[in-house]
Structures are given as structure tokens and as C-alpha cells.
Amino acid sequence: MVPSVLPADFSRLGEECAALADAGVDRIQWDVMDGRFVPNLTFGPDVIAACRDRTDVPFEAHLMVEAPEELAHLYVEAGCQMLIVHAESTKHLHRTLGSIRDLGAQPAVALNPSTPPESVRYVLELCDMVLVMTVNPGFGGQAYISEMEPKVATLRRWITDAGLNCDIEVDGGIGPATISGAAASGANVLVAGSALYKDPEGLAHAVTELRGQATTAGGQAG
Ligand code: DX5
Image (tube, rainbow, N blue to C red):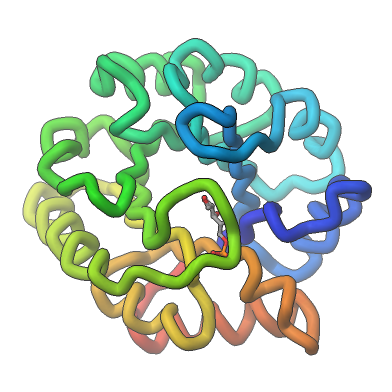
């Protein structure tokens, strides 16, 4: 389970990262938004760097920015082990993914809901993960788009047939009512924001419950 920190208390992000680590999450996702690729503005690299020593849990930066290749090094220097770039945000995706690997980070590619899986078919071997957005990026608390499940299944088939070691992550509207469908379609990494923070029994309970549901539905969930 990978939490999005978008619903967290921004006035104490370091403590929030430590609390997520204590809740047993596998990674922490930073939703980086530039106000251009998406109509919202969030975390610069300095904010992430300020939280880096509060936990050993790996950080992934979901770069919802135009021309991510221009900013990638700053997020690696800030302590992000994985960088996720949108296929729709960079002119030379193959080169951008390679440059992230050269920076010593894990490259991953994200697809907006309207983007077909074919757009990444020829770069899958460069990726440690593909992120299928199950909402239109830019905000938390939106409704899950179940029409993305066939796209996840197609990518899972391509990855399995090619014998690649590439995870599939889904992000957006993931919660108790939607996580099983996403996992059953082939996603093995599940991002959740509001579903984690609104659980009345707390973060650790939410992480355990959602991970259990995903594992039951899909057999392997991170
Ligand atoms: C949206 C972000 C998501 C979002 C998830 O652009 O990429 O990570 O914060 O939040 P929920 O789980 O509330 O949809």
C-alpha cells in the first residue's frame, strides 16, 4: 500500500511521514503538481527533502508537471527513489526514462485515463512500474473510474508475456469499495489518499484492511 500525502496535514508533513511509516506502508507517494500539467500546485523538492530523514520508507515522486526531465534531478537529490513521469508530459519519453535511470532512480511512467496503453508499449522494458491513473490527475477525493480496469489487464498481459519485472500501480479513488476490482485486473501496487486518512480506526487499520482486500483479490499487493 502506497499512501498519497495529499490529504495529510501540511503543517506537519514530517510527523505525517513518520506516522505513515509506523502504519506499515511500503512507499510514500508525493503528488508533485506544477499548475500547468494539472490545475493544482503542490510540493517543491525542498518540501520533500525536509521530510527525508523522518523515515526510511522509500519515496516516489508522481510528477504531474510539464517537461519533467528538467526537474528530475532535483527530486532525486531530495531523496526520491522512484520518479513517475506522465507519458503526456514529455516529448521524448524513451530518453526521459533513460535519464532517470542514469540519475540512479527507478523510472516509471503514468497514463491519464484517456491515454491508451499502446503509448507506453515500446518503453515498458525501461520501466520499473507503470501507473494507470484511475481518476483525472490533480485532486484527491475523486470517484474511481472502473473503465480503467481493462487497461490494467492489457498492461499486465504485455508485461507477463514479455517476462518483464515491471509493477502496475493504480491511483485515484482507491478504497474499500474499489480496491478489489483494481487488484483483480492486475494492479499490484495500490495508492490511496482519502481512504487512508478518513478511516475512523486510524492509518494502520486502513493499511492492513486495504492490503488484505487487495491480496485476496489479486494475490500480490504492495
Ligand atoms: C491525484 C493524485 C492521487 C490522489 C489520490 O492527482 O495523483 O494520488 O491524491 O487520492 P484519493 O485516494 O483520495 O483519490
